[in-house]
Length: 547
Ligand code: HEM
Image (cartoon, rainbow, N blue to C red; front, side, top):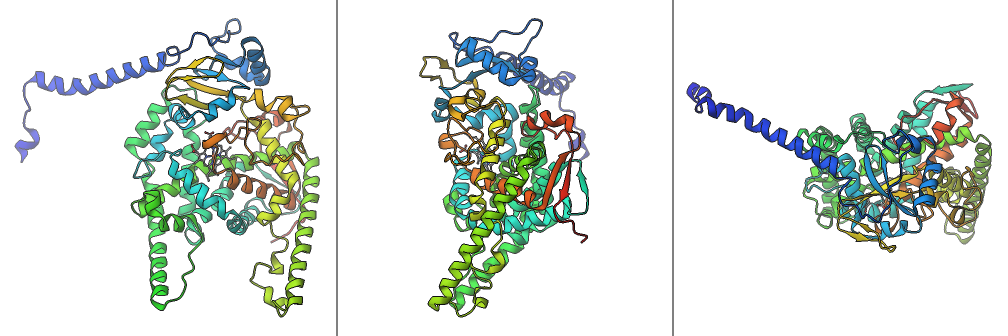
């Protein structure tokens, strides 16, 4: 035994080889990766694509871009045309502007998922939780959202609202005077994670603190992984090693499986019992149940795999939606006159819906379908729900919708939504994007384009889209925060429903929202997704309560 452990495996030369070989491989890999990183941006470029000149003494476009992204992008487009090469955040990319933007989204061989993976290593992160190693952009994830989440939004809304209200009251408060929240993102993250958890896994599992913590911790990890300010060339390699080898997300999967197992067993027991008795089994309404019911369709192998898919849904949904919900509050603080307008709209919508529901009740009473008002309790027409933020109510808040769409139009990074070429792609202007090249979309060319956006595109105009038939979920070349085409974000309906509900809740609870440090206003309004919130917020309640 001892001999086996300590047996010399050969001469010194062999020993040296055993130690040196892995180091050699490591060094060779490092050299290879360094060369790859250094050359990736300069090879594979169509010489017909112009390269933007640097300002005197500068070695990248970072400073010029950061000073005034609109000015920089406008200068580039004017000087070089709609396609040009730019060097930002330690990497070269080809920027594509209007009118060629549409082609990028409509070409299968230009991939958003591949580009995000190249920048961050995100596929190792998501595939570390899914047994079949699907990335966040795998068709199955898209289908689950399209086929299960979106069609059931109206049914999910009451529980989303309940979670949001509970966390608002607990964490933002409704006391006399101004309540300072130094890091509102933490609260909105909890609010969104909690709402998403109940939609994805059902109330029973979602109310477990460790489940919620898992959702929040993973979201925090994801935020670190895709941090828009990171300039490190090594970030994707580091993340691939971390999530592909060390696999830190496995502990979160175990928590979800542990929480889900007894619930799923109990559901199975109830289903079997109902079958035995010949009565209908009312299936719980959550994504976990629907995925379990369709496991063959989605190629899912066991409960661990179901939890993996749900965790990926959490990852793609919580970070983005919490960020938008948080920044909505900074816009309410920056444009305080909007709060009352949005509150008035909300009151009118709720009064109108209350009237319509009363008419429906009266009609049922007159026809004899209902005997008395008491018969409506617990039904669709329960009078206690007349003033709820139902999905119908939120849909009718058209000013809130315009406000949210305008925030997304105004705030977006001007060079954004990367796509990597999987093959050589020839654009309609004859320029070639060679395989492996990364494209950035010139959002300035569409989001700040007066032909597409109307008057004053550089200004924030909260009611810009009222009556224009342009809902916050309507994608197109004039509105790209969710991408467009076949891969347009399938979660945008849920995301916008939640962000508008947060908005409705805020204007109903608070008469005033103010920035702790007003000098940070411009920075707050132009912060990128995932960027640290630059200052806190004061919330002043409409009706202070002491509970
Ligand atoms: C404000 C919130 C959100 C923003 C700004 C956002 C933005 C985006 C963008 C820009 C894309 C790429 C689109 C393209 O390639 O053309 C995308 C894709 C995706 N999003 Fe979202 N998203 C948000 C919320 C959500 C939510 C709530 C979910 C899930 C419920 C979700 C799930 C996905 C998935 C699965 C994809 C990949 C789609 C595919 O490649 O087929 N997103 N999102």
